[in-house]
Length: 229
Image (cartoon, rainbow, N blue to C red; front, side, top):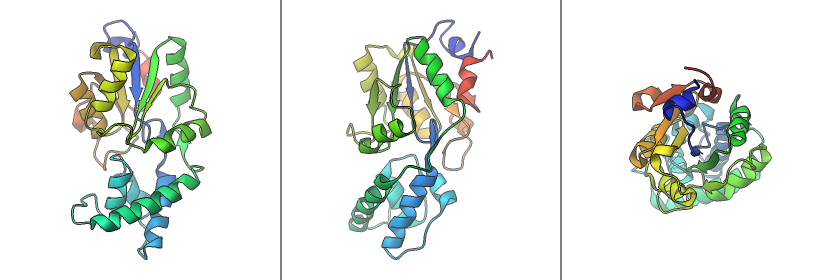
């Protein structure tokens, strides 16, 4: 029996929701490039990919504030400067997503889920304006019936609002839904929404092992959902 069926007592879920960055796509190279150009516009040294990899996961506003602080802690950052930097970042990030790549096993897994007539959705903290074009560019645009971006609703993950909103639209109860992500924000949102959660080891969790957040299962590849466990 596949892990996916084990999670649902022999059945398949009616709805699978996904995070985007660090789950389906490695988008850090493009995010880091936009961050570095923003910092350089402001006369500051570039941060680089390694730092940005630990800063992503809480949306563009927080990413920019962390870049200005050169730290994951950003409370001391001047709000006016953060607004200016966010505008620059959004301009730079909109220019290119060429370096973002789909993780191995993603398309295969999405194809299989779609063949089972399972509804698919995306709940990400990335600003909504970037999500659909990025998915189309990476040939993932046709899979998701619902897309919730970081500014679609007033709340972002780890708040469960996005997951609850999708379940309402899909008319699916929590016990028939699964959320798949790579960070503590994803695990906490899933737990708060009352849905099963699978977490991936290869994503962005601020340098901490995702197993520490105690999701229902941890995988090294999405294809592990389809394999016997």
